[in-house]
Length: 113
Image (cartoon, rainbow, N blue to C red; front, side, top):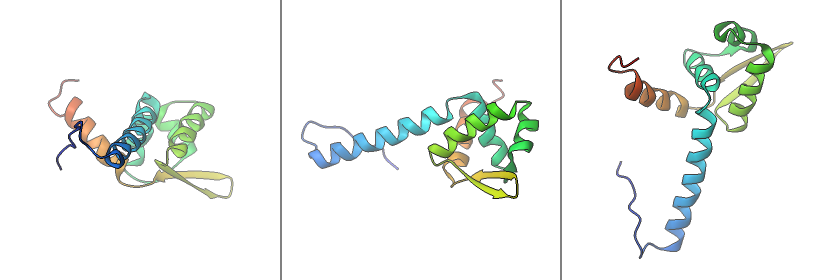
């Protein structure tokens, strides 16, 4: 897919659409810009996890994990499911997985460390 080209003669509705898309993209990037949130997404790629499982996987306190999950949920990246007292999370769609593949390719693909 080709990137759109800004031009002085671009119709206003196209420019408005680009601004809206840039805002959505910026919010997405802010949501994944925290190491803890990024690691949560990495763990959820393999499937649904409970908050307790995420705490253990991240070696983090429940409050910290819940705070990061709240931000991911606010951005529509994860979906919660309650089973009794346990809350499980899963990826909301394929965007996080696709983004993680790009991040991996950029930063880990050639073993840069």
